[in-house]
Length: 204
Picture 1 (cartoon, one colour):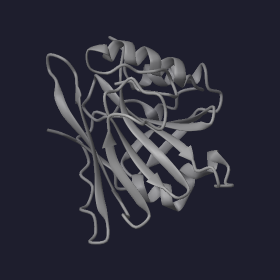
Picture 2 (cartoon, rainbow, N blue to C red):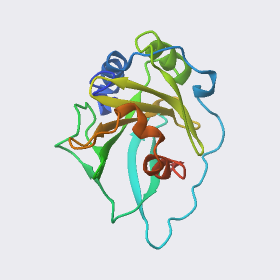
Picture 3 (cartoon, helix red, strand yellow):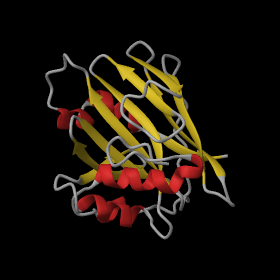
């Protein structure tokens, strides 16, 4: 999976290996937090969205011989955000064939998957990022625990996918032009946390 405008242009599908390469280059970061390492725990199912909420679903194929469809789901308020899975007009460069885009008044988020190199896992990926991003830090939202760091005009968050040795999830945060908040503060706002605190992965 690697679409990462942040880490490198990650190539998807058959180009998964190349995608990984692109992502890594764009991502580089600081010491990898132990909590960010891949989790072998079973996927956590998020509660169903309330009546006033909708559920965003971004799915992709992870792996080759043992390929499986992975879904990333999270609730959002349709009065404040719009979500769509698109194949063009990405927020940032990506090597993936499709990404999920959540658009809001203050910020937008691009959701995509990244692929590991052969023999790599989230712990090794984090170590690679830590060597390039001094600001790398732990990112924790509900059942998700990963890493976060700034990449130019964007802010990135990466999370391991439970029971998946092939791919990880990459979120690219883009601040709205008229938003005066510091980019680094947005991942800790109530609006952003509300999106990810109930997020979950599902293999189908």
